[in-house]
Image (cartoon, rainbow, N blue to C red; front, side):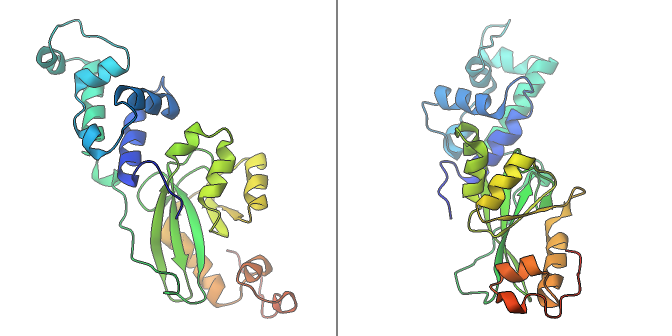
Length: 244
């Protein structure tokens, strides 16, 4: 599992809060938090942020003096800051909560493959390769689909090669599902040994993976047979051109 500077929970809070400030990129928002919190961001430090803190960090000031009066001000702007602070505290909506990771050790699922899914919400395939908030990592066999990891893409915002960083996050996954991907990015993904599968309409990650599981158990197309390690001469046997 690639190491990350933030926990999945912290990365989720920051990403969701940043969406409220459309004039700032995710990178800019994160840099502001890092600077204001002295470079230390975790669930504890985020839980201590107040509306005043956040407005100060973003370089804004109150017309009213005093934290209490400022935070009680009934304005649309203050409402946005209050919502952002609640998100940073961990009070995200039910639909924003991360799915539970299922226990897994190498060897648990013989003849299985690892699949990455670009996601922004729960267990949905709804992410663009270059902008999704995270990759859901599944282990898939003929009998089982197991969510074994969730990898935040937050650190990619600081990488000189953002696409390269994202490829490195999923380099142990020979298959990647996305709703969209650009040509140069797709080329980099393929060069990294990952096969991109574009599903423009997206949908439930598990339901989409059932389609892959069906192909895995019946007649895998040549590209999937190659990933599974089937000998070249055997890859077209029993192949019925199923659509994955």
